Length: 308
Image (cartoon, rainbow, N blue to C red; front, side, top):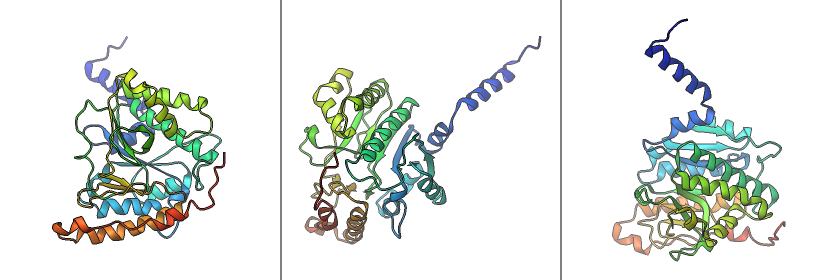
C-alpha cells in the first residue's frame, strides 16, 4: 500500500476543496475586500436595457462619486435572467446569475405584484446564503447613486451586526426602514435572522420582505438573537422619500417612493446633473444647495391601485 507524504496529502485536500467550491464561492472570493465584505447589487433585464439604463446610472455614480471609483472592484452584480447576466459580463464586472426555478424575473417587476414579491424573497434567501459562506455584505439597490464612499460612515464597530437604510429617519422607528441598502456582518446571529426571516414568508402571504422585517423587529427577534443594529440617517443615506439636508455630506441617493423604472431613470438623471453642479460649488455655498423635485416619480403613483 502506498503511503502518502505530507505534500501529496495536502494536494489532495486542496483538490477536494476546489471540487466543492461552486461558482458563487469563486466570484465572492474574487470580489470581496480584505475583510471579506462584498458590495452586492441585483439586476434584471428591465434594469439593463435602454439608451441609459438603471444599471448604467448606478455604475456612472461610482465614477462620478467622491472616492468611490475603487469600490467598483468589490461590486458583485447578481443577475436574475440571461439578458442582464450577459450585459454584466459585457461590462466586465463581477457577475453571478441567480437561478430561480419556474419564475421569470426578466421584465419590470412593478411594486407589490406577485413576481415583485417573489423576487424580493428570493433576494433575501440569496443574501442569507452569502452570510453562510462567511462573507459580510453591503447590499445596494441599483436605483441608488453612490456619491461618496460610505465605508467611513458605516460603523467599523464589529459589534454592530445589521445596519439598514430608512425612508424617513427619526433615530429608532422601524416602520420606515428600507431594505434597499444595508450592511450585514456574517455571524451566527445574522445567519439565524435571515433563515427565520425567509421562513416567515409563508405566514405573511402578499407582504414584502420589508414589511415582515419590520414585524420581526417589533416582535423583539433582534433582541432575542442578541443582534445589534442601527438605522441609517437620511442625512447621509438619502432618498426621494426624504432628501438629505446637506449635499456636503450626503453619501447615497435612493430612488425610493417611486414606482416605475422609467420614472427612476428620469429623476436619477436629474440628480446626477445637480450633483455635478454641487461638486463645483465653494464649500461656503453648499448650504444653499437644494435637490430638485422628483417629478417623474411623484407622477408614477397616479392612478395606482394595489394589485393584491
